[in-house]
Length: 598
Image (cartoon, rainbow, N blue to C red; front, top):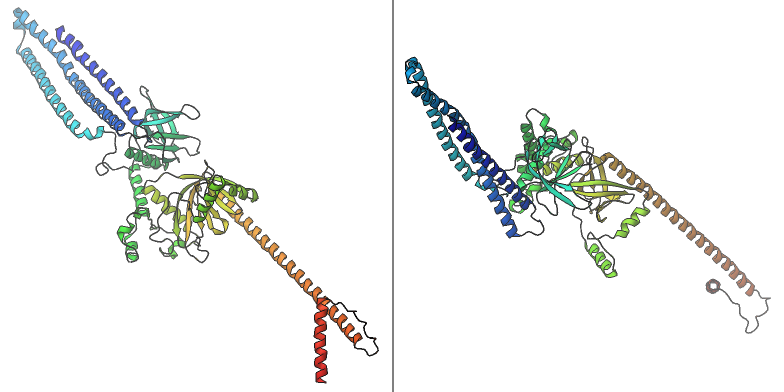
């Protein structure tokens, strides 16, 4: 009677414990392989090392998956063996009692025999069910091994079979988090991360519950380019005080994490149907950058061939269906050109003059920056300027507009650029320092202090912030063609401070520049008036001198023409000035002419 129970304890339970240990070892091997794959260098990409790392991850994942499935199969089998291990000793005990006590067989009725027969039949049925269940589980394991074989490779799957899901409001999985170990050194640790409401949580191995990493409400997330890791993204809290850098396993996983955190930051998870609302938001953003059929029909004759425009069609945006009252009066073509691309990064123009400056600087032994501007000009402008304010901004995009004088052109440009960034999954932004002076606006690289762009204040036509999100503001700049050109470029930025403060600073700079220009013109006008007065006085003094010389000449002529005057002695001459000599010659000619007429 005790033999089946002892066999169940010593054989079946030990088999389960052995499978558990094997599963733990395979899980550790998988973690080691994943750490080796994640530490692949981005700069020194070695195909052999990458192939070995991928093969190790494939082998460890397959081994872990197979061990896990056999472990679960043994656990399910143990449930059936537990029943038989208890029922079979009892059944054997009852049969032994019947055989041993034959003298008391007359006391056992037919019901006991039926009961024992039913119990035996039940044990056989349980055993048959166990065999059937084990066979089905083995078939399922084989099918799963065949279907899950491509998933063991830690690479991006085919986008056609597994596209990126952008409607998620909850996500969990393993990520690598960067922890600072010193002033310049850092380490990466693999943890299990999951979202819970508006919070990002992490849970280490062996921990009972997860811990808070950061608050995701109104946070910002974007993909970043790390020197030593791939597929990294960065989460910044609302106040900007906490920054978390994470690494995912693949590009698809990175895009899904970024989309999920963006949906959570918009508080979509608080609605009843969060995924449907997220799908509608993404669909509306897709429609915002998809031209309508009527729009395409109107400009079908104006557009060039589709092959030439296919490369930049992804960055073309159009105006949505909901327009403000001011925009409803204007036509669609009066605001934005249908072929206008959106620029998402700062590209500084390099002209021949800049290249000449760089050559001159190189010959003279001075350092020149790659944007064609020297460091001295920035310092001179900063020192001479009355106004000097610095703001931290991030460039979102720019596009050409046709009506720079429109009031709603900045808000409409913001809507199109933000919708295009959301659809094309562009989360990276270039951070710069915006320097506002009385002469110009400058975008300066915060690390190298190099001027990326320079906007003279005379080219700034408009500056306003977003109505709802005060951190967004835009600038409308006049092109190089001058005021006669109706086209302009609208730049959109995001700042850490209030955008209205930056707009007020730009307005103050324009007022100071306007007053300075008026003072300069007044000084120039005063100088011109003084010069005119001096010139007039010089002419008057010259005229008086001429009149004086004429009077002196006439007096001398009258004195010389008198009959009583004695003749002038020999070698005595009258010395006259140039003006007097010229006047005397004119006087003699007039005298001769008068005598001839008489």
